[in-house]
Length: 112
Image (cartoon, rainbow, N blue to C red; front, side, top):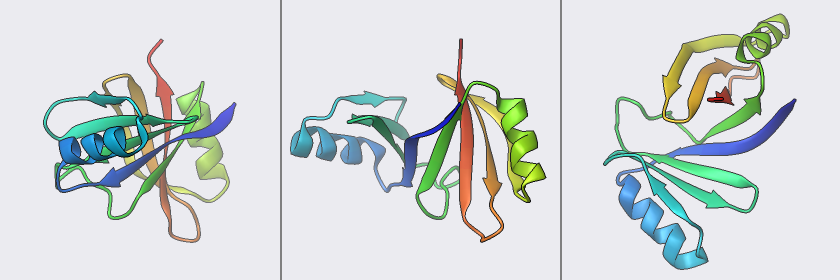
């Protein structure tokens, strides 16, 4: 299973980004400390990262899977290059990759 269910954005204030979407659209917000906030939109979660050392250069579309290792093999077999090794975060694990056209994306799996 592969589905896009998450997009991460760089932000100067994760808390302010979360408050904006909550006020503007009524979407629920889950803060994960001062530098990260999730906003749950219809069928898609938007993440806002304000820690400059952790930010992607552009919005980061994230693909959900049930098998992170198999997804990595599929990405590499199709010509993708892993740009960040798998790492854990609150709620799951993910890795980042660059597809042949140059865009960076991520694949994640939730904790069981």
